[in-house]
Amino acid sequence: MASRTKGTRGGAPPPGGVDDEEEVDALYKKPLADFTRARDELAKRLRQAGDKGASDRVKALRRPTAAAWTLNQLARRYPQRMEALLDAGERLREAQRGALGPGGAQGLKDASQEHRAIVNELLRAAPALLAEGGYREKGNPMDRLRDSLLATPTASPSDLELLARGRLSGELEPGDLSDMLGLLRGRPSERPAEAGTGRGSKGAKAEAPSRRRGRAAKEPPERQKRAGEEREGRRAAKERESAAEEREREGQRASKEREQKAQRAAKAHEREGRRAAKEREREKQRATREREQKARRAAEEREQKAKLAAERRERLAAEQRQQKAQLTAAERESGIRRAARHRGLPRRQIASRERQPG
Image 1 (cartoon, rainbow, N blue to C red):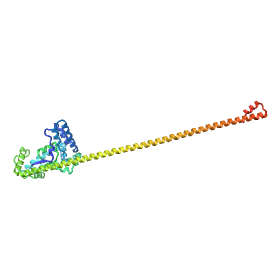
Image 2 (cartoon, one colour):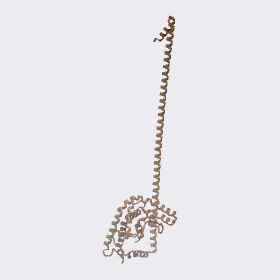
Image 3 (cartoon, rainbow, N blue to C red):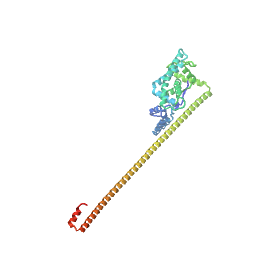
Image 4 (cartoon, rainbow, N blue to C red):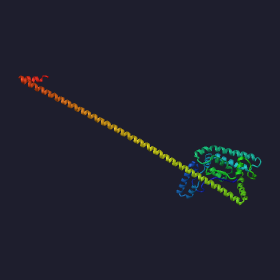
């Protein structure tokens, strides 16, 4: 059974490149939206450290699809269940090979049910991971995720190694649809089981590639060429689609960042406007207080001036009354003296009369 992995070429560990594999592993642990930025930063650090080859290999790592990212997280967070899935897939492959033997149909059915039960168990944990990763891709990633988990029995060892390590950048896809359908339905393969292909047999693993090569050799060269071109075309189309989706996501992120920047600028402008309005209000209140204080001072000054003027008038009136009284007293004294002189009174008597009250 042939198989291939969509977009996994960028998910393999850089061969002989990065000294610290933990840094590469950390890329696939990060949220989906942070992968590209973190990858570019790691490549930049490696280049600055003088390791251009490792930098180029890290730069070539492709951003996982939403389904592939979720598969990686399932493998990292539930390694025992993922290992159980891979073991169940191996048993399902072996049951498929020996399905035509005695009791093989029941063994195939049991192995298929066991495999699907683990797939369903992992699928139940997937929605929370997708929400955590901030899924924004088109389509339904759960469908792709389910197809990838169901494809593990037909996947190649290299693809399964990427899955076990949590480094996939694309979904697993079966290469032989008829064999895959047989596994899913618990139906025996139409090809007879060969000797030495029982459960746990090393011969099965060694002979499977030779059978594939034998079938490929029997096909006409033109058909082989067309099949290879079709595979390359599908792979290229999916790579273009993935690149377009990544560009679209980058555009959405940039648009969101611009929108957030505009919102921050608008909020800052609004805050500045509120501060300016408060400052104008304070200035207005200060001006009002100053006018009120100035009016109070003017009123106090007017009141003081009025009080001083009233005191002046009162002093003048008192002085005038005093002067008038003095003048009246002098006139009275003068009249008494004149009357006394007419009557011939002695000076002592005149003085005594002057001292008498009028």
